[in-house]
Length: 316
Image (cartoon, rainbow, N blue to C red; front, side):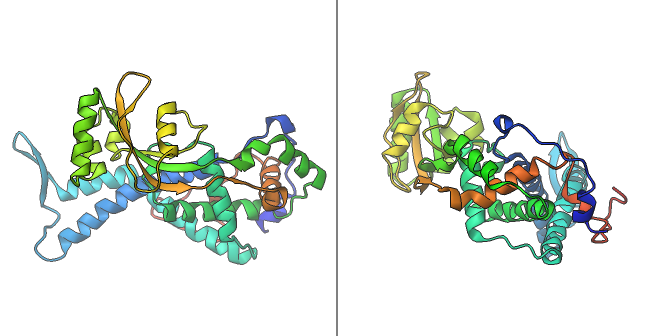
């Protein structure tokens, strides 16, 4: 029996409109899994490199502590233990959703993906791990999530008036301000900031200097990346003001921050603000309201049996 038929047998409960919020959490969960997977596959790439010629083998020493060696094989085994299951799960889910899209005749357009990405960025819910993902990876995961939601909600009927009311009550969600993908270097004094700026003027790489000079540890570990910033973001207003005066790739002068330290910011990407009309987000709203009528425990894994999934870790 197809999943859509099974879902019609579930008891559906409506959530008060005042409690409805933009549904970004499922996408963010997928992105967190993807980040872990990226680490694992990077190590696999190193392993493959080691097997290709004279670059190394499973017994290659990758580190030592007081003479005690850690081999490539030990390293790989530990990475598989921490990230292997999640990575394989993501790969299986990607294939399951592609088959589901074909089975249920589901289409996801580039416009829908761009809308979801814009809404996710404006919600300011990206954590540091997600900021390391490129735009293509983000869009790939959003596409998979949209397929899942469309399959689950294709038989759910939402009243037109209810959708219009949702749009009116949540109009701010669809008025997206200008957004900046930015990097930041924070130092303790203006003199330190001037020295960093001089190095940048002489051709030093911003990300490298952020790792070496920035005293803000989280962004420094990411090469200065502070993600997507809007006027509503929870960052120092001085940073937002500086970004608003820059074009893509430009670097600011030293900016006095509210804690007395100084920052230098760079714009990697600039996205113009946009207000979405009701007809542009109607299908998104319909899907959001429909998802609220479904059980909260729904996941891609519920389709595994339907598409005959087997995997290394046995039965789920």
